[in-house]
Image (cartoon, rainbow, N blue to C red; front, side, top):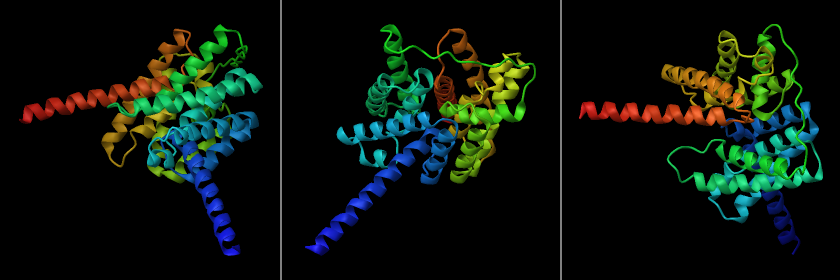
Length: 301
């Protein structure tokens, strides 16, 4: 009997350990990575800047994962954290824009559940879902909160700028993927990426740099450049196309530049961009690449 209880306790611990790893992999998947240590560092970067947003991320990744488990989605996808990262981003976004309160936590839970359901639907498509489930579910939840005046949208303060602060802007471009406008948080995030993949870290750095240089050349608002608003989507584009060949550098660069202009366009429409520029530019490059390859194959035939 004692042996059975001991084994049962051990299994429980192993289950808790495995589940915790799944949640941390979900955190790392925000940057399209799959690494427990990376997930820990990302969470540390968030909590360094905001404990409330850290709690929001934890609730989001937990609810997103539990939803997938309850609905019996693909076990391997769940194990890889693919049903956690959209929920984590929903949690970060809603706490960032509406603050931490009982209504915002309830909205967070609903949005995280919705993001997992949307991801399941989108996983059957020909294009990778990336963060589209997060974008769709967050836009839906934010619209409901604003239309029914449930929680007021927090006013964002963007400091004036006369010059481009290159290093802080590049660092904040990393952090802004998770809504962290903080230089130290950005550095911690970069270390987290580097721990998982050096080539991804290089591509993320290139993407964030593109998000500083390109908008500066085209005279986009300096204050938005300095807080990393043109960089974070390019960071994700960089990681999405990172590979160990020079062709990937071209794709990283082109997709990053495209994301900067899409970001500027969406901003002018008065819509909160989230990671929509990353998804749209990446899908566009993938589709163009597919068309080019198909045309090349026909020419050979």
